[in-house]
Length: 484
Image (tube, rainbow, N blue to C red; front, side, top):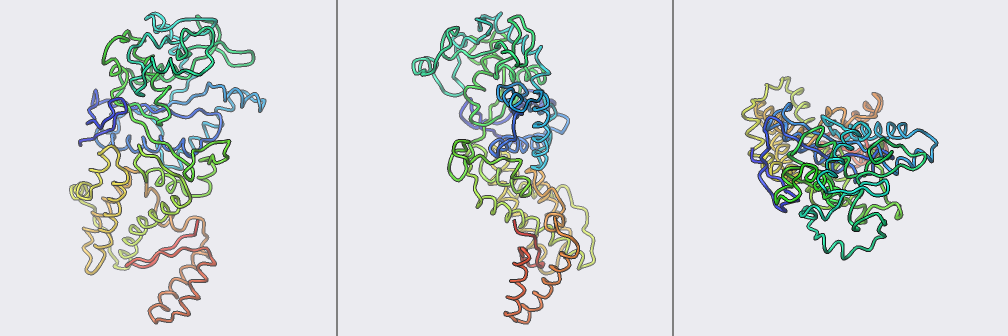
């Protein structure tokens, strides 16, 4: 495999070479569990789930260590708990459970490690102390702040010049800061807020230091890949590098960034009907609500329909097309089983070397290994489904059908789709009597169309529409599902 990934730091695609092929490490910034996630929050876990599946295929499931953190210390969490009059731990436990349930509906596999900030306070305090000892931070009025002027490569990830940032600062600067862009490593807790003991008083960590400390403690440095949304490049990931590098005395080394993460990946923004999601505009769509209304695979497909680094506009047309695309692929799987039953045959076992060949000749592996080109990989899925339908025409070679179907399923598994039985996909939510009625109407429809009795065919079509049924025709027959 030659996997290339676009590295935000180097601003180009680079061939991926892990530090140790027997222990490939990946860290992705996870949720702050104070409320339900919105649809934009779902893009990073879905994108990096595809990457993890690909890495595990190449290096082995036991050789990839994937960490996605949980932020359970935050001002918004404090505010939510105070408003509800409930303990902070109750708020975080509730919304973490909801997040994990929503991720499961999107076929996002759980990470190998899910570090929580509250479980790593000792490591956080120790890293802050190390940064202070290196002369890259200072204590002031109960706070500990990182001194950005101490790290000469500050701004390299985001492409920002520190002098320009300082000159252009338009924010109110706390009196205890040496310069406007110094950021908090530790801050005192107010009355009623959670706090932990430290050499600088009872308090809690700043946002950025949490990830730096948890990465080092759970994965070790340097890690192979650090991922997240493009909105985290600055200041979060920029500050992470500064902390992680300076804690170990690499502040003045030209390539110090390599001591923290070897590759940086960021997914693009998601908009709603071409507008940025905003609570003030009222267009924030909660993932939790969405996956109650439509299948999670439809949402996942929609999130993967554009290249991960490109912006993605979320709208009803995107969801409708995603559902149709999945119907088409599930329909190909259904055609195989239907015709095999009609022929009274059992599919032979697929030949693994032929299946692997299909993954290459279809263009699937070439696309997905090219910086996770999911649109190209999706096109390859359709090529494989077309191959299945072509193989079902005329005198059927069931070995070819079996091989091609297995290749389609293997490719889909890497994208995390086609994960349920096709009967469940099409028949979900209907009882046996409803199913029998629809199947009878479809049989009558075939008879009417064969006899060119168009008025009767129209009557049946209207009845199916009244039942809220979508009919999908193929050379192997018709499949159906409920609308929506």
